[in-house]
Length: 167
Image 1 (tube, one colour):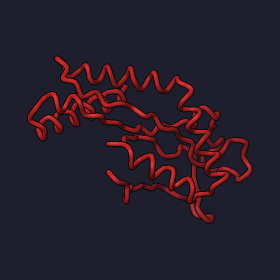
Image 2 (cartoon, rainbow, N blue to C red):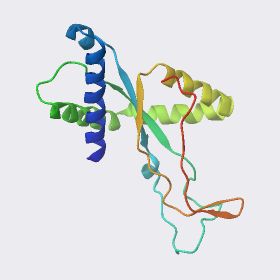
Image 3 (tube, helix red, strand yellow):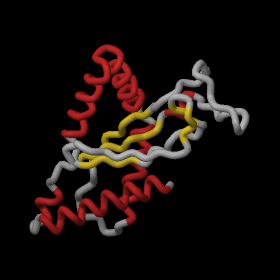
């Protein structure tokens, strides 16, 4: 998929960047580099689109509203490979294996429990600590497909920016 290619290119590019910075190839291979990939788990909840084009979703829908995502903790391959396409193949293998593991579900549940018991501040602290201990983070989570409104006004588009992260 496109995601696998993007992840493989990012891994390969990061390895080349480290190779330029560290003259000894053994130093590059011995680096412990971790990445976090943010994935959308919303499709698992059975989201449904809006029935009529002009109709806004009701606040009491059966489908859970809001974000539903999980993290994949990935070890970035730092060994020199003969073919750069091997980075794409390794990225695909790693992400497929992690997506099917119980870890994705457990992390999503853990985040929801932290939010429930510690509140948004506790969740923000846990997320910050997780991101502070990773080398890079990657995501391409799409925005919502349903029509949105904010305080009664239709939202036509939006964007986000991440700031204050240790990377």
